Length: 213
Image 1 (spheres, helix red, strand yellow):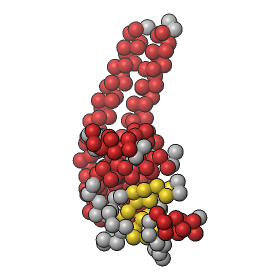
Image 2 (image 1 turned 180 degrees about the vertical axis):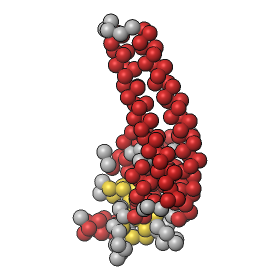
Image 3 (image 1 turned 90 degrees about the horizontal axis):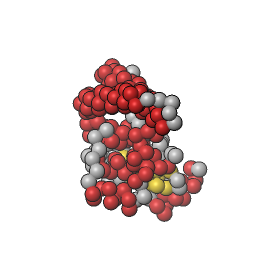
């Protein structure tokens, strides 16, 4: 595989090097990404020494930055069109379920540093509440099916719907609070890797989601 990546790099990127992580040569725009041999490479690195990475610490931490940026995404017409042109629309909207931020993501970066304990705890709570929201949605849908077949009443359907809506509102508040708690980590990673373009992270994240289906 390493030889194959080197060959591909000659044509698609630049050249192989002795870097300890799998990479395919230097690049100029931190945050830029592309698909190479059904894998995703991202232009990243520290101290202004960016390379195309397929894996390793720099890749993982750039992916973590993308996950944090995704917490606060907004789609305008121009970016929606860009996703369409890149054939990444479906992958972009699959991110939340298949590649959502986890406590493991943050703990791996924290590496035991107590500075990030509150953030890890907050993410743990959000993960549990997201699972609860999905359960309540499934339950509401099940009650809806039972109602159509005469096995459930309108009152039961209304109750299931209220429970789900209450949970979505609660989770929305949790996510807003989490953005504030996560901002120091997002800023740390953005500065470390000199990546300030949110859209480049959205594209990278969507490509990664598409490649790991």
